[in-house]
Structure formats: C-alpha cells, structure tokens
Length: 270
Ligand code: KIV
Ligand code: NA
Image (spheres, rainbow, N blue to C red):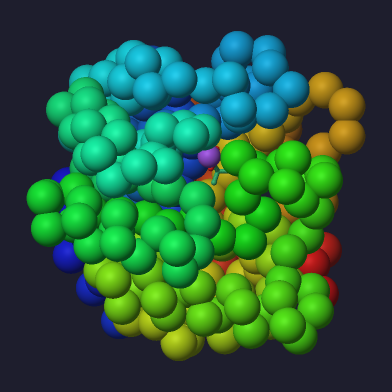
C-alpha cells in the first residue's frame, strides 16, 4: 500500500513514481495489478468520460461517484481526487466538498491555484485532508488563460510559479503537481521543495509522472499533446508477458517512469 510516507521516502531515495488518471473500477483493478503507485480521479473525466469541451461542467457529485468506483477496487495505490471547478471558492465549500470526496475514498485532495490557496491548504490539512496543489497549466482556468498554453515561460511567470509553490508548501501542501511548464523550471521546483512533485508535460526531473489514462492507451482523437506516449501499441508492451494488453500498457508506463525511460526530451517543453 502506497501512502504519502512512501512517496516522501521515494523522493529522498530518488525513486521515481507513477500516476495515472482513472475513473472506474475495472481500470482501477488493472492499475493495481500493474502496481501503478498513485491514481488520480481527475476532473479530466469531463472530457474523456462525459464528452465536454473542458473540465468546467464537472460537479462534486460526479467526482464523488467516480472516486468511489475507483477507490473500491484499488488497495495498492495512493488515491488522489480533484475538487472540481468553483467547488473551493469559499473555505466553507472547500471543507464540505473535500469531506464528500474523502468519504468517497480519496486519500489526497487536489486543487488548482497558487499562493491564494494557502489558507485552504492549511485548513484542510488540519482537518485531515492532505492537499495536492496543481500549478502551471491549470485547466479550470482555461478561460482566464485564453486557451491551453504552456505556463512559466517568462522569467516573471517562472518566479511567480516558484513563489506560489513555496507558499503552498509552507502552508502544508503534501504534493505539488506541475502541468505544462518548461522542464528546467520543473526541475528547479522539484529540487526546491521537500514534498513530492508530480509532472505532466514538465520533463523528466519531477519525482512522479502522470498521464491521462485514455491518452496513454491511444484512446484519443484529434491532436495529441506533445508529452503523450501510447503505451498500448508500444512494441515493448506488444512483446511483453502481457501480450499487448491494457494492463500491460499500465505496467510498461510504471516501469518506464521508474527506469527513467519516460518522459524523453521530445515530450518536454523548453
Ligand atoms: O484532471 C486531470 O486528469 C488532471 C491531470 C491532467 C493532472 O488534473
Ligand atoms: Na484535473
């Protein structure tokens, strides 16, 4: 069973860890069999499960439903779940909604933002909900950004991101997640904090790597993000003892992250 202490130990030892998004019981069981270290019930379910254009329509009830389905069939991974759009604006809502998702089976609650979240991070942690803070490209703010764009590319925005990370870690954040930031910045952040840092499109130097399950199985249409690799059709999976199965794709992802063969330089932003 992976806990926050396990991830902290891995960080000290330099052992990388894997994370995949998951939304239902059967895939969750396969991720357990593949020994994936952490699972995220992401509000990306708004797109890959519900067919919306963004994560904004996802509700707390949706998150509770999917979290319960995933948590029920996985006793190995640390289970993270998102608080969805506008469900953590007031402290009162934040606590009430985090409670619902923790009671559904999440072990860590993820919220998007920066230094302005410090009070909420402290309050939730004090109440028993460890917090992962998601920074960089935070999809719930797509309308503020004006599209899905790499963040932290200028000196000022990189400095702001670093200051935001330090503020939430100071407030008690247990995990940092960086999405679509330059690899060099992600490396600096990972070295600057003593909590585990998970990356997606953030280069090879973060402590953990996460991908959306559908993306890494090639269950996608249209343009695929640069950091995505299809582990299902990867010939190492096809030729493995898993005979090219979905479970084999999860196992290959896990192994590739731990060995450091994923991500490659072509998957990162500079
Ligand atoms: O919702 C999600 O899947 C996420 C990951 C992309 C990190 O937040
Ligand atoms: Na998310």
